[in-house]
Length: 269
Image (cartoon, rainbow, N blue to C red; front, top):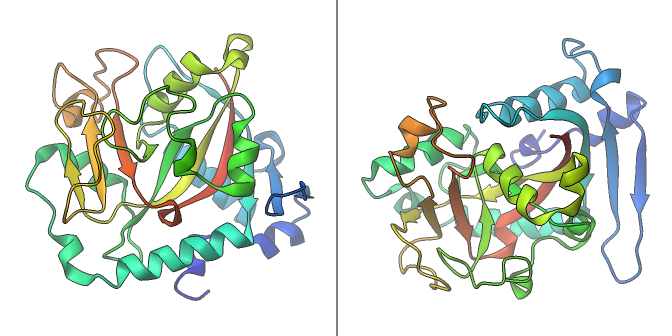
């Protein structure tokens, strides 16, 4: 694989393994292909691409668990959207070209949770990470075909972004499921979807309190906020010492090309 391909699943390998897939061609939308990974049908130690992907998603999913919400993984849908991938790669190259200045992070201990979520990659300045996003009823299809849209800001939350007027992601899957709980009617029946996405973290700044609709802070590429009010997140979240289900963090992204939906994760909670 070349440098950027190292981020993505090996779609050709999935096809060669006989993984079920379907290409979606909706009018007015970018066509994309969905690969369906069923945990019951994939042996975790098989050494296959499907097993590697499933293990990686499960590692992200069960990294932080609220003791009252232990979800069952029903299915992982791997998304291959060539148009969105090209857009993301352009944003990745442009951001990474800004160089070492992006490594000058503020000295704030709250950023440690975000640091931990960033894997090693060739893009040491743009710092891509797999982060979670909550979807509302049926919106995962629109996200997979058209990506994340700043024009739709506030459509689900009815506000312009508590920590900035951008796109919101989290390192904490239980925080995403809590949002899905509050916004998805299907949750009452036990079924929800959250997405796992490539997000360019770049150079974040910590936003200490709610500042609805705040524009991007000059000199930074993202905003980062911690929603746990009773103790530092690296103590309450990383050690599993939750004070409430909505403990979590939020990364705010202000450029659509800095995001790429990669997986739709279906849960029974």
